[in-house]
Length: 303
Image (cartoon, rainbow, N blue to C red; front, side, top):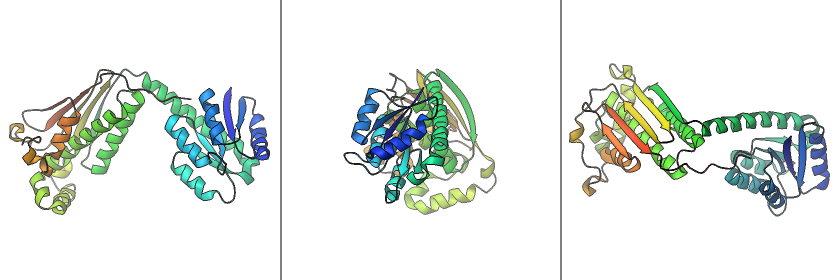
């Protein structure tokens, strides 16, 4: 039985919305008169969906969205909007609400909207459950030198780490920063052969030259290979570029105070600080980043 919590300070509107939902044979409806009472209901037993008014005393709809997103991120919220609450509704959608229905359209629109949101929520929760039970993931990606694509790849892998529950949020962020630095180094310094010292003297010239070389031979033909291993024991990334490489023994010590402010050592410093191991091959075109998983990260309530 799907459990839906209807939140509205108007008894008439509560009964109108609840009556429409109760017609569905597999939906059970609970009620709360404001956001504060709604949070108490959620704590007593997480509903599958929350339908909330926007303008309420005690805790309004926007504040309820923020609280649910923070404490129960897998519970979807659908907004009921009335004239005068449009701006608050837009803010609530930007902060995590799943959809909305104008109160004047509850009759024809409420049940179809709730059905669609429940289907999407079930798929998301199923994916999350499967990911939490995944023990090992191996994948290989071949990426271009487009910095936007590289950053998107990092964000995707960050999501996998979160869904598998491998690291705390702070550790996950740091691992993402380290991987992004490795990928950007492979693109700019490896494949595009833009000297990092150029950035120290002319920041704009560094990136302009990099953009030009993404369309010039032989640079434009080079790719980055990213090998990924995610497991309950460790996270390992192997980043390989197709450039000429370099002598890793010539890398400056990024921890030397004299080098802290130099742009050319920033990426290496972050990688070595945030990962347990950073190893280059002899040719200098492959770096292996390893982070050990010391204990499972806490998993947010699934609802």
